[in-house]
Image (cartoon, rainbow, N blue to C red):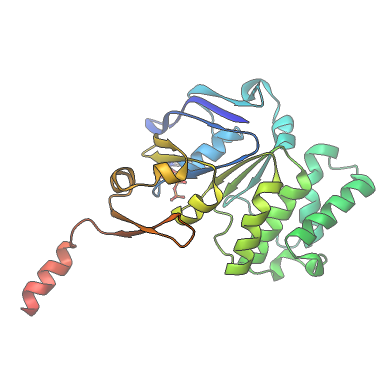
Length: 266
Ligand SMILES: Nc1ncnc2c1ncn2[C@@H]1O[C@H](COP(=O)(O)OP(=O)(O)OP(=O)(O)O)[C@@H](O)[C@H]1O
């Protein structure tokens, strides 16, 4: 379980996160959504102590992060993020094996049990056949799956994912979505696609300008008044074939450019 309690993060005089509180429960997938620049990545960075808190605290399964060494955090929290830039000269299997670094250190191997974990992780993301290829030869989507395999190999109790389906085709996206529930007991995922968030998340936190604009079950939260205000759009909800509403969006009013263009052509 991850608890953010009144978390505030500043960069100079700028407030990036303002009094943010939420709980990501064990056994659940919790989504973080919000417009560009609303603080989602900053929040993930705060959760691994990469962004220092000005005030508030973050608690992981009852442990206050401030009093835990970074190595402890690395063992308990895996990141799959936009920020990770692996060495392109590494082989796929080596990058995935780095998932064991915090557990058994640089100089020791994790033994046969860990090798099996690496092999299982590669299998889960369908990259066993590329195990000995250099990362430089992989596509964006394949690299994303390598990052996920590394998190799986790490076996951390908490996994933080920043837009993990960005470069994935439809099939691999579905596979990653199916994997989410068994990747770790506590999963926190940043997503831009609200339909996907509604599909995969049990609970969602909506950030807006560094503050929590709403939190709850996606079906209750993803409704016009909140989404219109947060994204500055007009939200339309359509009943989906499975009973779950699908969302579409339009601009709240015609753009000034289009109205002047219409006048000119009239
Ligand atoms: N070190 C920093 N110094 C100053 N401003 C920063 C710093 N880091 C982030 N910001 C600003 O804080 C805001 C939140 O950034 P963040 O990357 O957390 O947003 P986000 O919600 O992840 O955005 P996106 O959806 O575009 O990825 C942005 O306006 C960003 O420019």
